[in-house]
Image (cartoon, rainbow, N blue to C red; front, side):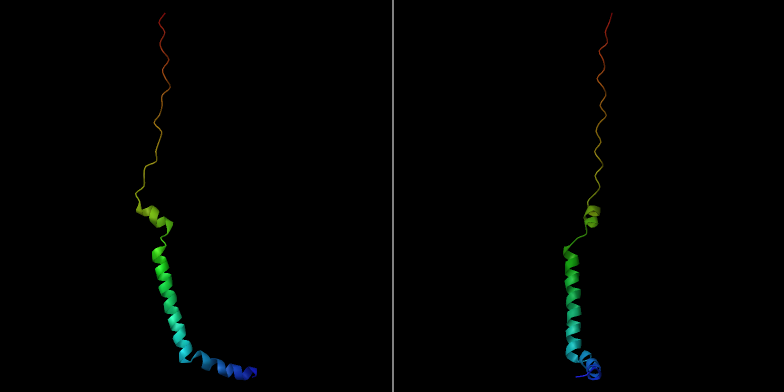
Length: 72
C-alpha cells in the first residue's frame, strides 16, 4: 500500500458507522464517569464554607498579682 491508497482509505474508516458508534459511546461513558467523580469528591473549600466559622479563642487577659500593701 502506498501513501495515496492510505489517504483514500482513512476518510472511509473514520466515517464508518462502527467507528462513529464507538466514539459516541466512549464520550458518553467519560461524561458519566467524570460526573460521578465530581459527586464523590467534595472540594475542601466547600466543606469549610458549610461549617459556621468559630470565633478565634483569645486568652483572657491576666493581671499581674497586686503587690501587698505594707503599712509602716
